[in-house]
Length: 395
Image 1: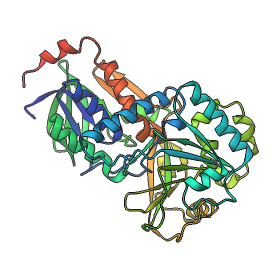
Image 2 (image 1 turned 180 degrees about the horizontal axis):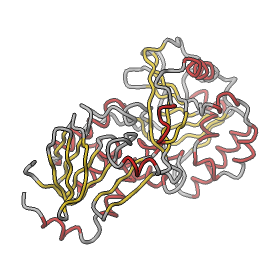
Image 3 (image 1 turned 90 degrees about the horizontal axis):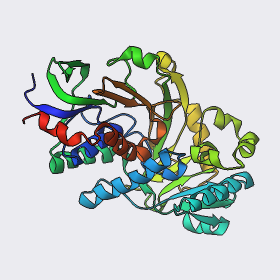
Image 4 (image 1 turned 135 degrees about the vertical axis):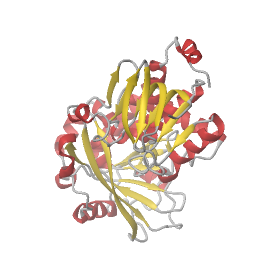
């Protein structure tokens, strides 16, 4: 038996779990964060590193906006690779230009800063942008980028150092239950841990804890493909670059009056068949992440998503990317697949006896919204009775 008892154990050290830990620690809770891998290695590190609330519908836009402040707050204390370099949507035709004008109006009413850019302004702002692709753009100066392969572990290290987070890596939890009013967690080596409450942020792992629950949850698993170019120091892409197919895909545009009309035009059916939209994000090392694809399967049928990289889909993405940017080389240094869980309601939540709280299936918006969502969730779990709960354990 692990001798220390905690207010909270969090299972899963990705973005969702780590930011739950952050907000709980800020409340003065004692927290144990358990991660099955040596460092987080799933969806939270296999993405673009774009923090773009502008693409989210309510309530996720609000969570993303809160998340911007959380990222900047931590960055002021330690370097977690945050860059305040904005996000730009590029319209490739008149329909997409109409949509970004309508989204600009929506955000004006919300007092969320955005700036319409004409074609010449886009060409001046975005290095290597092709004149033949661009009609106009919409720029969000307050949005952020991070280095996804580094950021989450840097946040964990910060929480260990500044907030005395207890962190166990390479530790697979195989059992979670309630015994005598306390949550009991058991790892694969038989080690037991106890806490007043447990939050499970299991990402796309559905076969170990509560498999029957997940099998009937409505969660879908999404496979995506991405790639990274060789470093290009002669190229200077600022911030997140989101293009025409993104305008057709992101949920924020669903609120635009012209959305259904523009979506029906579907000028690139083969790309949309595979959920392809083209994003660019240049890293600190000057390499450029390009992607991505989206293929889906239910929890009971995840094996149907082949583990291999489909070179045809990569070719489709590169061909489309070449229509947008005129890069000096299209040599890639790496390709990879990622998997994330999504749910029709935006996230899957399930509570057991007001002690065990499961949340997963946040979809492709985890980097943008996890920090804000986790703040709301911790506030909901630890209400005004929080002060009394702190007296339950002696440490």
